[in-house]
Image 1 (cartoon, helix red, strand yellow):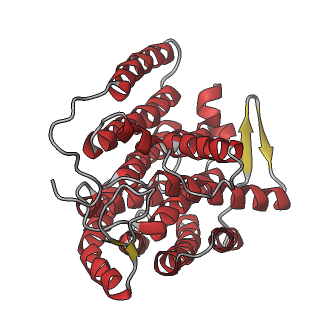
Image 2: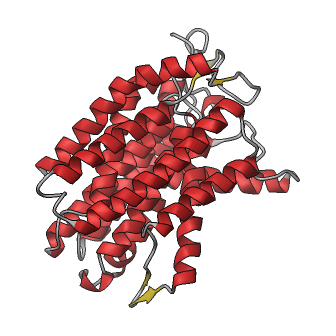
Length: 373
């Protein structure tokens, strides 16, 4: 655990320190978030937060290779190298998009390329758990499902990146939840505690923690597509690597612990995935392409109901934590205690729903994204 804590702190420190440099680089290269009708911010903001987060994750991962606990596991080194190369590629695609505003299909091709590189370097889905059995994937199915999953997660995080600190916090909370699960799973099942999944997720959490002071309202810089797609890829590959290191046949009996390794990323990104699905349905029904942006995302709707930016972001933080950690606790407990967890989560969800749907009283002029209060 001490080595994982060191990885988290290094990722946070490197990300925090390099964010200022990346901000100045974005200003010099003109990588700025323009003010558009669908945006919440009212002034141009520099991008390249994703570059700083990549630097933090890379520094923490390279450090882990030198440590006696994590560095002694060949599988961890091999998988994390593949993840880093794919992360570099997708971050580069995001940087080009932040500067030149790439067409949607070009950006999609870049995501597929990064996912393909991850697969070529050995990071791919090996099995799919089902109640009572585990389906081993053949080579073709493994490649197709892995690429699809990585691209899906990359776009899901990109969809939720609409308010200061929103995507950073949601992914950071989810990464901490995923780390808690993967680490506790190895402890309770007596497996090796050095896994690629734990390493990548704790590095993600550290990078988000280091970037949040620069990105929380009022933000001084945005992560851009370089950051959103990077975080999505890292979350996806941490899940995929888990399927290669933990066999569900080793887990205790029960539906929840068996399927949880693949369900958990969906729970972590529940809000982004919900936003993505709603956007697809909404835009398709309106006769538009699914990638044509609008101003009807979940965070837009919270603002329309009168919530301030900070309140909207904090509400989505709590929703993410409730779903992520609730699913984890549900998977770790056994017997009647699972019903207690479900009851507590339902009560908390109802209370949170009341707070979310409630229309707070506005005081003074609203402060929008990118403005000082």
